[in-house]
Amino acid sequence: MPTSHYLTPDQIQRALALRDLTDPSQGEHAIQQLLTSVVSALQNRWHCTARYVRNPPVVAVRDNYDRLGYDATDVTRDRRYTRYLSPTTMLRSHTSAEIPGALESYAHDADIDELVVVPGLVYRRDVVDRSHVGEPHQVDLWRIRDTPDTSDDDMLDMIDRLVEAVLPGAEWQVTDAVHPYTVGGRQIDLWLDGEWLELAECGRIHPGVLRSAGLDPQRWSGLALGMGLERALMLRKSIPDIRYLRAADPRIAAQMQHLGPWEHVSPLPHARRDISVVVPDDDDEETLGDVIRSSLGDDAEVIESVELLALTSYGELPEAARERLGLQPGQSNMLLRIILRPIDQTLTSADANAIRNAIYRAVHHGPVMELI
Image (tube, rainbow, N blue to C red; front, side):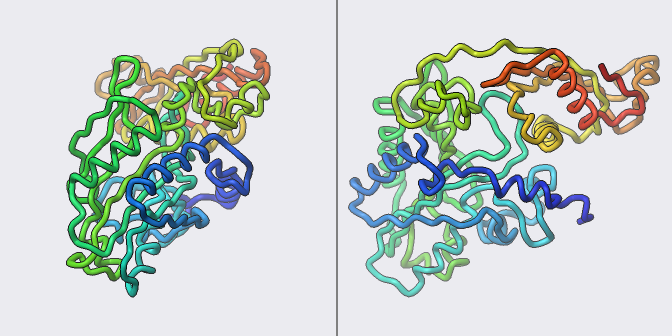
């Protein structure tokens, strides 16, 4: 892979400096309270021990993918979706990357029934809107047992306890889901405000994952569950914007110290900017979201959303439009709507235009620049 496909030192430094909201040593946060509620509910049900695993987010590519059963050609490995530091290391894309190493420690143990809790930051290429960030918090909850008879009934019981801890009394359903590291995978959805919303995914631990950790599937079994903690906290408190979880505004920050319902905070006015850009055909909203966040740095916090309004390929555009844009085969014209709404500062028109231009320069691949 070319050197240009790896993160720069500045990008690595920024990623590693980001506060982990799940870590009590970095300050209190409601995410920690929610996680404690979930872990306590599962421990009380199973009468098992709990083990927390916290490691730096730089992991081996092998642990993030190979040892969890991902195919060598899986699209998730593409540099568009994975933040590589080198051919063999990356910023973890899920906290499941810590699981293979954690499971190895049980190889010579007996009488084990333990909940392995792995919370922390993960690093994704994702869209820019009020529900997604590029560095979300996730928790993996894996129950490991030295018995081979963990069943789907055990999994459904786990789901019931999880939902009750996250959103007491909520209606839930499961649908089939496929993960390379589970058998009988399920997606867990909650019924809220008239729609089904995803909460987590889970399944029974795949025998191949156990073998890779030196555990005999004829003796060992367990459950694997992964949950986005921002999503869970936003559902619990009815928080309307994911950026609020890190906001410094005292009216907002105080509400991130408890699990009580969200109290409305009047938002600042928004600024809208629409841009028409030339992009490679293989660009998508997740790729663009990452490019935008990387190019803006801390200024990305003022973006409420970037919406794709239209995508038109080279062959679909009239010749006059292709000439005006300087569009080449293999490229498309993308119309984006940018909503800028800072959380705790006023944004002037000049500020909005500067951010608009920075986004334009970052994502536009055509010879004609239309700056304001």
